[in-house]
Image 1: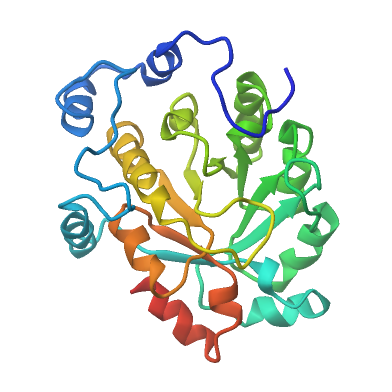
Image 2 (image 1 turned 135 degrees about the horizontal axis):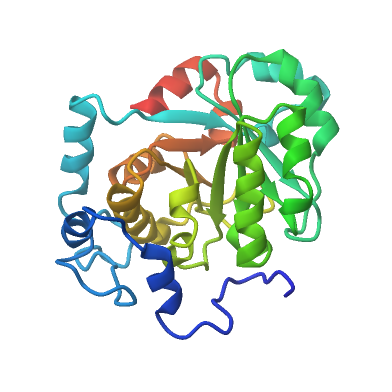
Length: 288
């Protein structure tokens, strides 16, 4: 099966993908009922009904996030994207974000997305320049071919798009990342539904939701992705509470608030960080 730009459970009867993905173990049924609307069967929409189409957080989400932060169970992390750095001075610009939590590295192949950026040699070259974890986002077709090389080059987190290959190969890619002792994750394009994470959710440490179309930096934030972020947060809380939820695209001091209110705890920001006069202050501002 060839990769598709827009995710579809091709050949999968309505709802069967979700049933396979859920498979909650003993003792998790109560959690599913709490998180997914009173135990509705999988395949029924879980979308938070109170969330307006505008992308505004559903009632209770800001309060919930504040409550969790107060209990010390929820930490906002900032992952500046070096796609907005000066590529002629990458070491210098990576040092500028030393107070961040991750270094976000966007890898594009010109096929999965209409742009070409950096590859394995650059990841290997920047690894010695920082003690921060490298959060490597693979926007490439059939990432199973390369995930081990990116791990060996120094990536700490490696995320692959669910749309980039068959489900079987995505599972294999995640297993290879884990076998290397690294943290695997999956990514969803804007048009990909939240349910697409379900087959992989028990295998990942991070889920990344794109809030712009992947391929280029500096795009406008898509607020209508927030209901999807909220939905994935509910899946995570029910199935894999240790999993992080990351957003990428148009994140700035204004839009970061709705992202956090919707359940994200890792914020990728490129232009908002690197165009700031005071980068450490901007990172603190994004953390809130």
